[in-house]
Amino acid sequence: MAAPGIDVQAAAELTQSEIDAGRRLAGAIFGLGKQQATLSHRMSKAGVDRSTIMLLKTLLVLGPSRSSALAAAVHSDPSTVSRQIAALVRDGLVERRADPEDGRASVLVPTEAGIEVLEEQRRRLGLALARVVQQWAPEDVDMFLDLLDRFVADHERHLPTMINECAIARSEGEN
Image 1: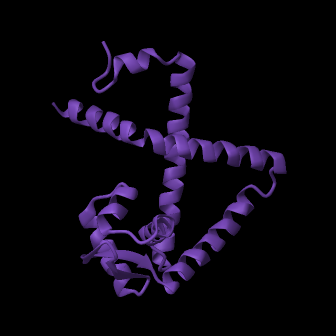
Image 2 (image 1 turned 180 degrees about the horizontal axis):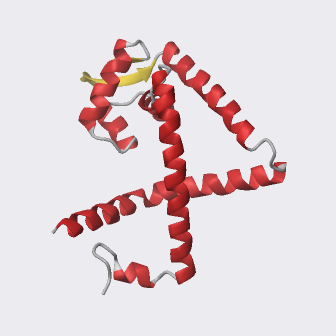
């Protein structure tokens, strides 16, 4: 009998080696997540909030966007993003502009100050991460980055399914 929340058909399509690789990957991601949480906590104490960076970066990629589109893009609750955006507007990092398609609505746009905060954080993080792989062979760094880019793209594509599978597993375990 399968564990609650496990899609038996999907699990049957995987080899034991693939399942083991998934578990190993989950462990590595969990470890990296803990490290990122520590870094985010320290950055927050220094006045750089992770959500600020994430929202600014997403706005730069999306272009002028409504708050609801931004919330969807970052896979977050609209009310949470609305509170975060209010703080960014208050701090002068994001501005609201009239939506050219509907003057009653507004779109969010990073300000020059917001772009400067994002660029400075990218510079600092880039330097810090360069130190992490400084002793690696250049071809190893290139291969790792190619595979990581591929993984991130595949992860994004599978994210809705992963969210559903994890949410189902949790809710079934409570019944």
